[in-house]
Length: 292
Image 1 (cartoon, rainbow, N blue to C red):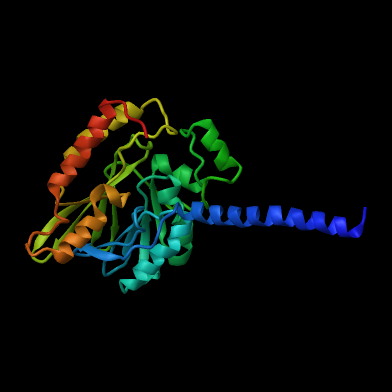
Image 2 (cartoon, one colour):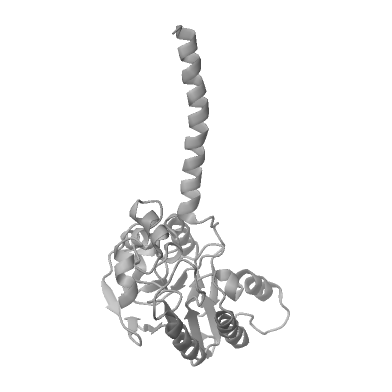
């Protein structure tokens, strides 16, 4: 074959392959952070701060003997969380405890990197611990999705679980104390957290509520019973301020803007009615058999 034809073929192959490689790299990077963008961190109330991305949430509770971080986002959003902590004037190395709401990649994917950066000890529920330690291999995920974890397309870097907690256990770092409520249904070990914060002269009850959405790719026999129990448990928790693992569900941006622009002294983050509506809406969705 003439040399000029060989060169032409090589050039054509490169023209076909290189854009694909570039696009795959961009897709892989986007999947590592789930399309999330950096969001401005801010204080919600007292020693309670938002340090998550634009939708996938993460929260910092600060204390004199060390801080607690709830959730790690995607693998690619861990640097955003660390940048937000630094912007607020805190040091990632002062985070002594990492907590998790549930072990899907959008909330546990960045835990390993955050653990390395902080040296913090990671606490997880009994049902979530094995999933986090395996990098997302959950027996309750339907087989096609689980296969993607096995071959490395899905999943996330495995984190070391230092402690396993049970429903009702309290995790403490000095005066900071958070109580675990295992509210299964979204996943078996889905965990909601409650803790008090002091805002001015008032003590506010905070609920960080785990997801109540039923996913099409997540199925296990006790799922319905778990959700029934979760609705009862969450309704029984006193909530002045409430958040969840996805910022859009509790109105992160809307409340942030409203507080900055409102002339009324009312704080939009104090929202017990919104909390009740969150649980009611989730239960109504469950009764209709809605699956996401």
